[in-house]
Image 1: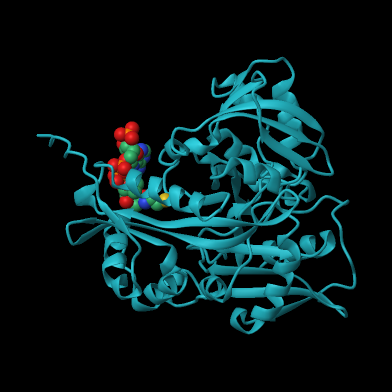
Image 2: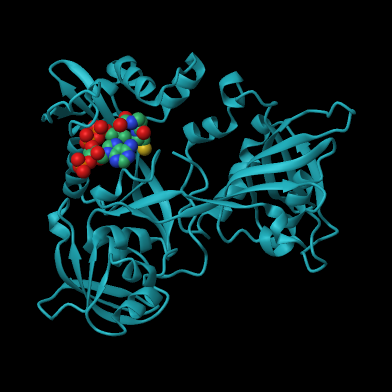
Length: 417
Ligand SMILES: CC(C)(COP(=O)(O)OP(=O)(O)OC[C@H]1O[C@@H](n2cnc3c(N)ncnc32)[C@H](O)[C@@H]1OP(=O)(O)O)[C@@H](O)C(=O)NCCC(=O)NCCS
């Protein structure tokens, strides 16, 4: 017998206090079917900005949660404040009764009121957040690369001055952070990491290992210092005939320049006693695919990564840079954030932009979610038109906005929050 859907209700919503963390983590673990050991629980708590949290209550019972992280995230043109939305959970007893919708609406209204222009999130399921005006802004690739077959093409960059150093990840934090800091402003989507986030990246207790080996780190350096690094685990194994077939599980790899990038990849691809490398979260324009002699050997798969919401379209659209000049009138539809609705004129070139209200006839009509999807520069707009999401009312307007919003380097968050 299928049960009837429970009636919708309006939860009471308020900020959560640090003392309520046990209830919060209880809701989270129930919703995600997880059980956190104390060290993982503590790491999670250390990342929470309680004054940016929201709890939904049924009477005195906490039944739903979310929180915002204060990120500095690179967008086309440079870093901007972005609210990273996370810890979204609703108790199974209260699901499909409007709790998430109430939390999302309240959070967006709060962000607007406090003058924040952008929000971003990682979605547990891709069908959830479009209804709240989030657009799928970033994709990623996952690789499953066999060691034999991973050879580089002759043109792959190299530098004989580079050498490798094996380090304990926890002892190399400063070096890793230095490389990451230098890279993060070069790619939309990357966001600054505070102490708590580095603690999460470098965590190496049993719960962080997921049944694999300890976290390992190789550093590429020359006499001038560190130029790149990889963090990974190894899952060792042998066939019944004693042939080694361990797996390298790559969690992140950054480098300051192309030769160091190629060098670090070779360190993890050529790991002795391993027959394959798996990487779950790589940018869609990963230079590796142009270095490897047989790109099919990447055995790549594709997933959505980060979702972006233009909370305040006026602030957001003038906060980023544009790749080309455009002058278009865009009619934005946005029932969840009605302050964004209406006709706006974007006038931009490579030097700057204005986005202002206009009474001129619309040349494009699109939902705010499409502006969110295109915001980080990784989405041409043509497919949204083909899919019936965006209307072009003046021939050429779609292409003009698309060419202005696209960015040379594909966006990539690189680290789930
Ligand atoms: C996903 C989750 C937060 C939804 O909460 P909820 O309170 O049940 O959501 P609501 O009742 O407000 O649903 C709002 C709408 O989203 C839809 N929806 C909810 N969960 C969905 C899902 N997983 N996939 C697709 N649509 C979903 C509902 O059908 C509803 O649609 P409608 O507006 O057309 O009626 C909740 O099911 C949950 O905690 N899941 C497990 C943890 C999780 O995945 N969290 C999200 C982390 S990013």
